[in-house]
Image (cartoon, rainbow, N blue to C red; front, side, top):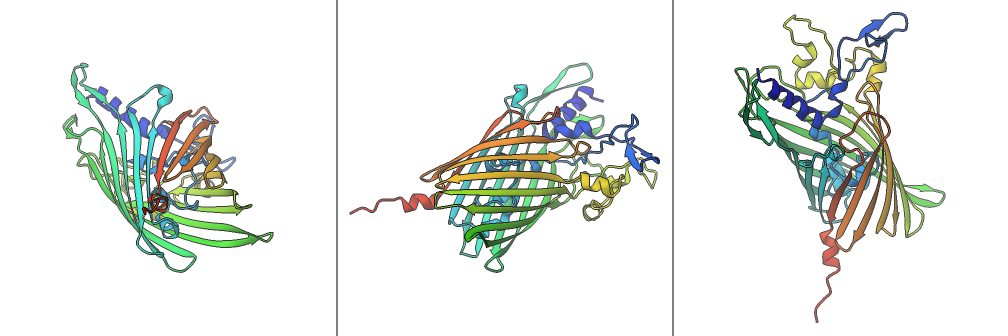
Length: 406
């Protein structure tokens, strides 16, 4: 078996999802306190692991500066990632966004990055369509055999292509459905023993809903938005001919954003998201004795339904699987924005905790968003102390600014 090759796969998985190292089995039940614990008596770390976790990377620097909130904030082209149904409430006819996210720059790695391109077009006041392309490059990997002899260089990469249709069902309520194709090429053409590695492919759907309304507070109009998004509801994926395929990161999220317009120049938005993976919690239980844990043998729909009540630690562990995002956004004259946020994940489920800050600027047809992540734990994050950027283009503003010729 090519040990160096296996090590490369482990490294690639860690690049995508650094919390993989936190996942472990072997927890024991303490009858004295009624809790599952690690053998040393510490917290039972049981991180949920999925394939293609690049689908969960937040590609938008605006949301990246607000603790990764995005389900209910005001719509732009990046709604394609969070909640496509917001596009039905977009006030611009056409929008486009381009985002570049460097990955693991704190470790001086230069060729790993996420690129995201998304856009939308309003078909009418009640309808909109959107498209998105996500590309994740994992850089160059040198493969070797057991003796250290080179087997060539690979450039693993993954991408997602998505299209969505959004429509208002009433003045204040909208829904959207989206379809996506997922391609993951980590080591195509290589082998582990007699097993050939092939690219993994999957199909998935997104379903989302948005409610938006004005709320009067102290004689001032405020905008309240609530969103619900189910994403990556799709087939399982495999890189070999094995019948035991892996789950993709299906997710359910609910978010709210409350925008206060103090006057014609100043506004402040409070936003929050709560997310949960719709994926079975890892467990050692093997009811049929075939050496494969039962949770891995579930179907996509079976895993989705069981994910609400299958944690070995019961209801308390299910609650620990929730991920929380909080964000603030201040705009001056709709041209300059200040943002900050906080993201929290339980220590037994990945332990990602970080503050975020960022800026936003609009000029003519262009918008620029910048975000910066500040870690608050020793758990490393791929975006530790890294700047990321998003460019937005408002083609309607370009048309409005044209000067008529005489």
